Length: 108
Image (tube, rainbow, N blue to C red):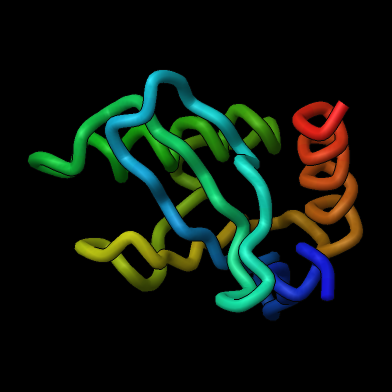
């Protein structure tokens, strides 16, 4: 199994399933892959209070994929560590390539 299992195509873009760890020392997208949960691990420096971690997650994914914040949304898991993120206008291949590059940088 690979991290690609966490990335799905939908009509308007791509959904990425993530597992968030708030309160980490630094932001790390992606942080790795959990094969049992089929989710990409994401570490955020913000705490899960008053939506700050969710805001940082959206900002980080919009920067990673060069999208406006309005083109990135959390579609499930607003109050949970397991979330699904919708990237509007991004194809699965483009998402996989960006996430693979990030994972390779971490593993090097």
